[in-house]
Amino acid sequence: MGVQDHFSRQSADYAAFRPAYPAALHAWLASQSRRTALAWDAGCGNGQAAVGLAAHFTRVEASDPSEQQVAQAVPHPNVRYHVAAETLPALADHTVDCITVAQALHWFDQAAFAAELRRVAAPGAVVAAWTYNLHRVTPAVDAVIDAFYAGLDPWWPAERRHVEDGYARLSLPGRALAAPPFAMTADWDVAHALGYLASWSAVARCAADTGRDPVAEVRPALEAAWGDARVRRRVTWPLSVIAARL
Image (cartoon, one colour):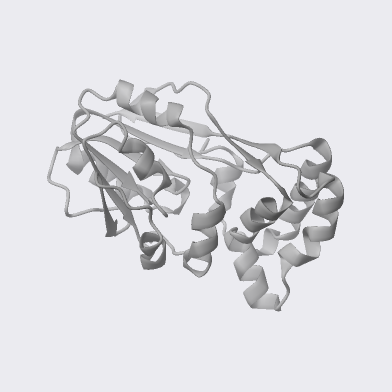
């Protein structure tokens, strides 16, 4: 089975509220690449990783199976977007210097993607995939987030287990590369924190199934744990990165 579309319904929220990947990660990928002419960002969502890669690679091809996500993608002169999943026929054989998958590898048909990697990768190309689980703020806020996440368990797809275990059961073809630690960070007030929760795919499915608004329900507890709703707090997501050289 190919990539499933879990994000079209809340693509605008996804674009508005998802955090940015660290610039240091994109710089590390470029430093590991033998050439920096062409990168492919597969499962690009709204283009967060693709635009970051464009600071280091001459051209970036970015693909996502969701037309709505691609419609929300951040424009950049060096990035071209495609509606496509694990394969991208627009890429010529053995031409891509770096392939990335940001928070999407767990949705892919692993065999199909591995075959496409071998087809498009230039000799010595780097491939990397990363994921992040729950964000951390303060112990009080974290407790509310953890309970909210657990309450959505019936609406998380089975593939979510790969996010929870940091891609420990997924692998990439090629020789493994050890990545340094990376984390995303943001400074948010309560309104932005609630908007981020609304971008979760399980929230959309829960609302569709039950008619409830899970984010509205958790708002009082989150505001109480946060304190002054206007205060911007540091939010952190440790990244789990797997990488290889093809």
